[in-house]
Length: 269
Ligand SMILES: [Fe+2]
Image (cartoon, rainbow, N blue to C red; front, top):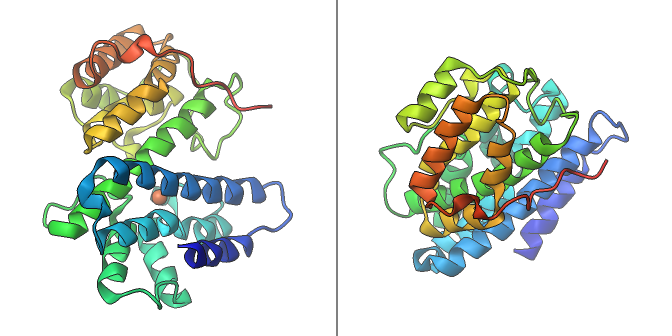
């Protein structure tokens, strides 16, 4: 994987421009990609099927390249919102092909990794996907969500919510939460990005991701970080939503989910 890692980093390096409007966001996605690589590594330690080839290598490749479309997306549109720009999963696969990133890989390994990159940002797992392709994609989506939960929770815990790109320009209205998001939370469904309007919506949406984490070790991992305690604490301005979020999380992750508290600290200023 070292050659692939150098290849990925070399490609990403080309997007650093010296601009404070751009470089922190390229760095953010590079760091995120590398953390997702670490997450799939931990997942594979607990889930035997993920250690078998060709799924194992495909998963590592998919973790490294899953957001390769983000660099081009940000350069062209200055946003990470697919809804107002381009589908970054599909763009990633196009870039992988154009750049020949998988040219030295076995055909089946490359195929599994491309499917995972293409579908990692879908709202739900495609129902028709079976076998190894489904396994690799499921693991990638878990690993990606585990990192995003920590990343957004840190941003939400920062006092001034300064980063509009990370929070996708959501309004910071202390008590507000969009009804469609609250409904998803209460009905036990995953909420949709497209329904978000307020910062609290993001908090509630992240809580609904417990429905989307597939591997038992993923659920254990998010529980151990205390990330949900931090997210839920931010809902103090919307007590009814906070209650719904807490009961959902206790139902899925166990009544002791909030015993790990305040391990998420705000990012350094
Ligand atoms: Fe992504």
